[in-house]
Image (cartoon, rainbow, N blue to C red; front, side, top):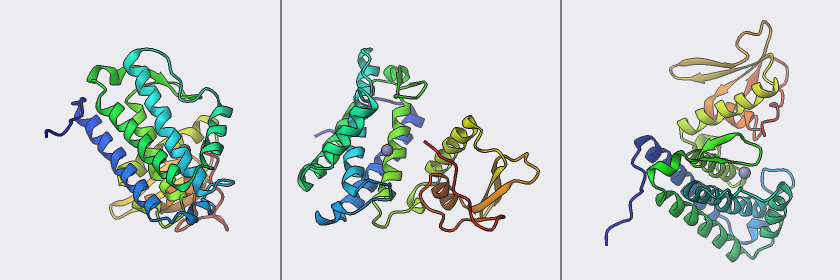
Length: 247
Ligand code: ZN
């Protein structure tokens, strides 16, 4: 039997799809490590159990597949009918039996993967839109999913950390977060110092005279910036300040 191949031929898109799939596999692995009883425990997200995280990741794949339908057919299909509908769906999903919840995750990931695989090159450039976002090409769904699966694998709170993420995912994620801060003016007087073997990179408000400086590795700074953890991070102030809101 000949394996099904991705329709898109663009090397950049192919590599982005690979990173998303690696993230999905990673999330799946962390999920499989949890017993059914352990699904009831809290996640790293306030008010959400692990069940909520799993349901959300499942419904997110379905929502992104709707955007791929939109790109393929030209018929506008939003990710979710409304914010409220999205939240109700997650609450409902969190009450599924463990078997159903695991199945939701697997099937929805597979559904999105098939939608990506079968999207011809030209449709990847068709414009789609998430609830509060600007209009973007459908290829952006690959990054949105990448972000979701890697971060929410950490949110399951059973051992995954930002240190498990590929460096290119961390870099882009941190860029996204700083951009969001900048958009709201929240990055004022806040400088990030990323320590790496090759030297120090400064991000954020690099023009500030007396900025709050937050220092750490790329993984630790990104975890802090995403509001997940302050582990490994230090500051020129007495306490490491909480990161500005991201989303
Ligand atoms: Zn999410």
